[in-house]
Length: 350
Image 1 (spheres, rainbow, N blue to C red):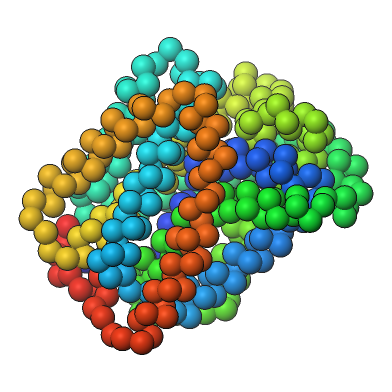
Image 2 (cartoon, rainbow, N blue to C red; image 1 turned 90 degrees about the vertical axis):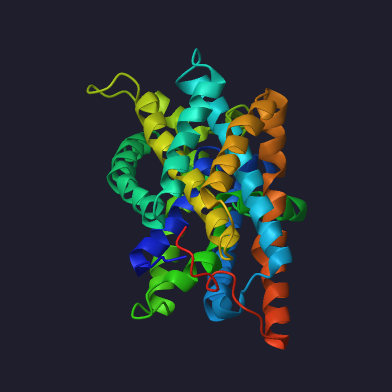
């Protein structure tokens, strides 16, 4: 595939995929599982996330997917897309579009991904630029709630048990879901743009601060008892804020989050496309259309409250195998024997 990325484009892709759909809800699951020390648990996991990035950067040339692992990762990203689409539609029905038919909302979301993935790869990559001013606006809105924070909500520290730390560490994984796309897109970064310590540290500071602040903010704004019944703390914080220029900040933000989520799904679709078409295949456009048709149909089977709760409870279980275990196995295998890189072997420009 003919794709060249700047360092900024590469990290923007990673940031959107990691923070996208789950950003408004992962805090509740984490805090309910980790207790009062959840913000400390998340900081520790964020440091672990940085170690992962260092590992990917050191061995990205050896993270070459053979046919078996390529299939596994494609299936994993398809599962993520289907789960995300079901969650997006459910959240929109609760917060913004209760009367809009579910299939219509999903069709509109998937149509953006379909258009981007039928076009040149740069189309999907450049969609992320749209988010930059929107995220700045969101940060301004969320800072308006600082006057209502209760600092005693995070103290005393050291009250969470060992079991809470373990479960909280697991729930923290939801915040960085999709980190494995690092080694999928890293090979497309221009050789002239070196990625070493400084770029990685800067990216980690941005994504780590962005996600950690949401956990700390949720704990400072709500008590532990309140968070047991609040599934999307970011939305409730914005709903509680009163401003003169818009009636409800949460409704305004839902459009920002929807844009964010659409681009998240589109980039996961691009990841599937990059891996799948690393080998020349017949009828590539038809295969992309069929993939997105599955994105329309399959989420409709999961649009129930109990299924959405199961997605929230179990989605993080994919993190350890796909972001940690499989990459280590792949590196070990490729250090022992050379094999062609699926990301680089194709001259196709699908």
